[in-house]
Structure formats: structure tokens, C-alpha cells
Length: 319
Image (cartoon, rainbow, N blue to C red; front, side, top):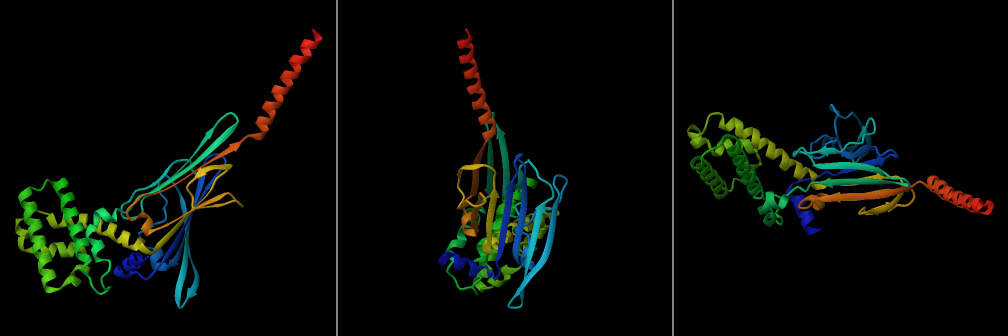
């Protein structure tokens, strides 16, 4: 708990969004998804957890309304619902948003039907992307030294992507790395960490200004696009730090197995809850399986066997 609170202080977050995702599995194996997010309006409109938008494949209906005032802060509710049921897998893979998928399937057999729900929330890979941040967790909230390892990750990951795209030679790559290290050392020596609160692309351009004439044409333009994309991903990760998620699934039939954290016996609804800590370094997987037995068909099958048996006995007696 202490570490979690420390993280919140570091990133200066002062808002919280409750995200509810309800999946209703229908008898034919199709499903409806209903999103509800509650919080401050600006937080509902940011990009860390985006509600789906209408595209060529699916139509979504979205509404935004004010719920109440809490100490002069307006609380809003955003709702998005799938316009019609679907049977295909939903995949949200944009790295600038929460990445996850939803899959529902149905298998029909002679005397029963089986339903399956699966969803995987991709982990944020905080430990591999920003490994140096952990040693900055207990610092004072006014200390911005935690920004340095973040910016370094963005810079070096951007250079790596640029090299793959443009085939930058190793000598130039080493010169860029040395220049970045020199710039960072200067900032640390002068205690100008506040400079790193600016956009990463601006810092990168300033750091490499002394050698800009030795860099490829359009280098800064190309790098800005790559850096901005990585910065969006980092902003998504930090914005998610005070978001809470609840996935609920209503599924037909008798539940056979699930890893849900709560099962409501009243309406056969399953619930999963997770937050930033649950997806920071690990995937969060959800699943449920149920079975619907066709009692009428079973009764008819048993009755047919009984009648057939009686018929055979009757024939023997007639003989």
C-alpha cells in the first residue's frame, strides 16, 4: 500500500475514474458490451482508457452527462454501448490506450450447449520499460528526478525504432547517445530537472542541437513522430494509475468454472476487479465457462428409449 501511495504522489495525480464494463452473453452466442465511466469530465475524455468508437465493423452509441457536484467538482458519466450484438472477437491494440480483447463463443451438442468467455488485459510492462523508476518511489513529490529515467527510455527506444526504419549507422547512433548522456549529465549537475517536464521531442531536439548539421535530413521530424507516440504510451500508463476497472459478465446456463473474484447467485453475473497494480507488470486474464442442458430434449430422449423398450417387450408377448 505504501508503494502504491508513493507512486500516486510521484505522478501528481488527483483524480479517479471508475470504469465499468458489462458483457451480456446471449443465448445464440452473440454478446453486447456496455461501458460506463464515472469521474471528472477531463479524465473521461483523456486517452488512457478510451471507449470504443464507431468504425467500419461496429457501431457504438456514446453519451456524456453530468451526474452531480462534489465540493464544486462536477462528476460526469460516460456511457458507450454496442448498437447490435456481435459474435466476433473484439481487439483493442492501440499502444496509446489500454490494450485488451473480448471473446465469446458457443458450442452446440446433441443434449447441451457450452458457452465460453475470455478476456486478456495486456500488462503495461512498467518494470521492463522504466526499470529505474522503482528507486525513485520514495522521493519527495517536488523532486522531479524520476523524470530522467522516463525520458531516457523514450529517447533510446525512439532511436532504436528510427534505426530499424532508416538504418542509421552505428557511429552516428553512438554519437547521438553520447550527446544525450552529456546533456542529461549537464541537467543533473545544474539541478535543472524541471526542464524534463517539457515535451520529450523538445528536449531531444535541444539535446542534439550541437550536432544537428551531422544528422540525416528530416531526422528531427521523423524522430518527433516516434517520440510523441512513445510519450503518449507513457502518459497512458500514468493516467491509468488512479483508474479502477470492473468487468461484469452475464452468461447463460450453469457456471462450470471461472476465475471471477465474485459470482452473484441472484442473476448469474460474474465480476472481476483490477487496477494499475494488477496490470503494471502482469497480464490480467478473465475466463468463464457455462453449460445449458436441454432438459426437454433429454426428457424426450429418455421417453423415446422407454417407449422403445416397452414396444420391444410388447412385441415379444404378442409372439
